Image (cartoon, rainbow, N blue to C red; front, side, top):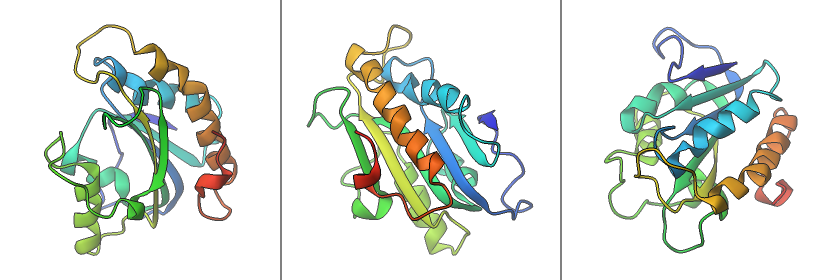
Length: 179
C-alpha cells in the first residue's frame, strides 16, 4: 500500500500492529528533498501488501501517526550535514544518535517526535532505522535533483529491498545492508 500524506485512521482508533512501515520523507517540489517521494514510488513496485509504504512532506509532530502501531519503522530522508559529499548514504538506528545537537531545521523533527511518543508511553515503533542521503540542496523550488543524490537511488533501493525481504526476521543490521 502506498499512501501519500494520509496515515489512515487516527492513532486513537487504529490499534493494529504493522510489522514493517517504510516512511519516506521529503517534499517533491524541492530539488534533493524530493528523494523521499521518488523512493516511495519505486518501493511500491516491489513491496508486498503487508509492508506499509508511506510518503509525506510533513515534519515534526505531524509525523506522530506515522511512528505508532508498527513493529519496525524504516525512515528514508535526505540530510544536510556538510560533512560528506552529496549522495553519501547513512544507515543507523535512532538509538545511535544519542541527542540531536542543535535545533531541527523543521523546528520539531522526527527524533523529537519519537522521544515524546516514548515518554508518553505511546505504542511507538520498537525498532527505528534511518536511511539518509547527504543532499546538496533541499531548499530550491523546482529544478533537478543533484546528480550524486540521484545516483544514490539504486543503492538505497537495494538497502530497502533487503530490509523488506527480511521484514519478519532479525532486526535490521547495518552490516547486512548492501552498500
